[in-house]
Length: 97
Image (cartoon, rainbow, N blue to C red):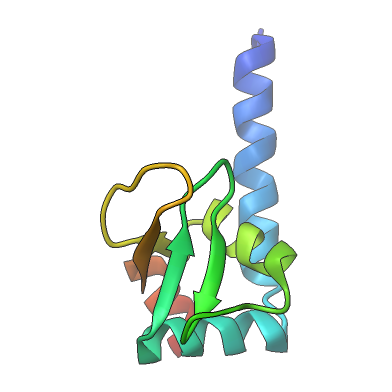
């Protein structure tokens, strides 16, 4: 019998897989922008994305992409600190698909 924690982990994994399977055009545009460089993540509970110093217009999509493991900070930063953004290997693969 699965514990509550195991059930939650399974649900989160299924949710992430569904999100990866349903990338929108905007999601792909954000991934392309991060891949091109000039992206920064503002460290926090859920990172916000800045592109060329300006806030990305769809932070909800950014949070979803970060939770799904498609974009990540280059390094660790303090809350409120800007850190360069990068595509993860999975993000690169999704963009190429």
